[in-house]
Length: 293
Image (cartoon, rainbow, N blue to C red; front, side, top):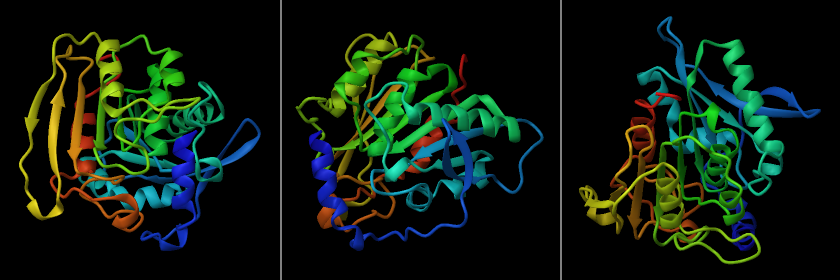
């Protein structure tokens, strides 16, 4: 796919990565005879009630530890009382084309194992991803919708083949954040054998799947940092309460997680918007959603 050609250029520049790649010892689970690793953060003080679980999926060429550093989800988890798992893709990538493939089975098994071991609420399991991890979120929503209460995809859209085979038959709350100047996974998608849909088309797909009707509203968010060269529009689809679709269009934004340090220098990834904290926005979207509720 063309997206991997673009990402390969970034891969050649791994030595310029801003975030360190070293991690403490990972936990592991064996799936399909293969040892799969992940980081897990559990808040130090939680109630006796079951707590939510966020599965955070890293970009191509990175790992779960770097996703942990990039998003800052741990601090929010400690404040809000949820756990975060940061799985590692094989070869630092997720298989985003084979519906129901090895990575879907891995994430599904990991969710089962963590619920078995810890006091996590099976009705409040969420998937958030960046870039290649965002593409994986769309695939998980299509392949194991009953395991997820909502997804959030930042700087990554699904392949058309994934949507064509989507098995999600229930409303799936979806949050999308994408920069219009993304040089890695373009806002307008990429043609090819397994074409990437555009960010607006991904949002429209989930809106149609969720039974939303009518034109979306567009609200310009406060430009809290005019110096960053970006603005943000919130595109909200008129959806049933159990299937909201929110799309944050980051005008001028690059291949970045808004409000947080980029993995690579901005001359590679494009501009970082400072007008929102993507991690806070993702959790605010997740926290009121429950599977079947």
